[in-house]
Amino acid sequence: MTKSEKALTYFDNSFNCSQSVFGAFAPDMGLTEDDALRIACAFGGGMARQQFTCGAVTGALMVLGLKFGKGFEDEDEKKYDTYAKTISFFEEFKRQNGSVECRQLLDGLDMNNENDKKIIQEQNLFHVKCRKYVEDAVEITETIINKQS
Image (cartoon, rainbow, N blue to C red):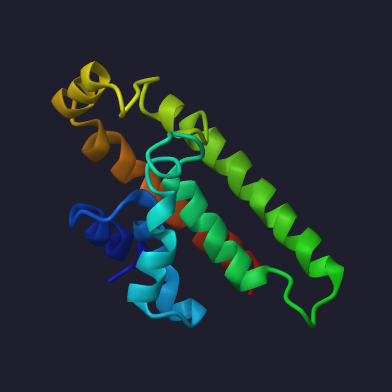
C-alpha cells in the first residue's frame, strides 16, 4: 500500500486530514501509528476545526520536521534547511490547490456555521476536496523527501 493509499484509508475511516497525512509516514519516522494519530489529532480542520492552516498541510509539515528538523545536537543549518523545505511544500501545495488555508480550500465555507456545514455536507466537500488535499500533501512530502535521498 502506498503512503497516499494509507493516508486515504485513515481519512475514509474518520481520521482528520492531519492525522491521515502524518499517520501514513509514522513508521518511517520511528513513531507508532497510534502515537502519530494522537499527535496530529488537534491539527484537524485547520487546527481544532478553526479552519486556519489545512490539516493535510500541518500533517505534512510535522513529517518534514521529524525528518529534517533541528534537534539538540544539530547545527542551525538543519533548521534553515527545514524552513526551505517547508516553503517548497507551501509553494507546491498552493500551486496545486490555490491556498493552504482550510476555509479557502472549502470554498470559504465555515464548518462551524450550521448553514455552511449543511452546504459542505450536501456538496460532499470533505470527500470531494479534502481527500485530494490529503493525497496531494502526501505526494508533495514524498517528493521533498526523495529529493534529499
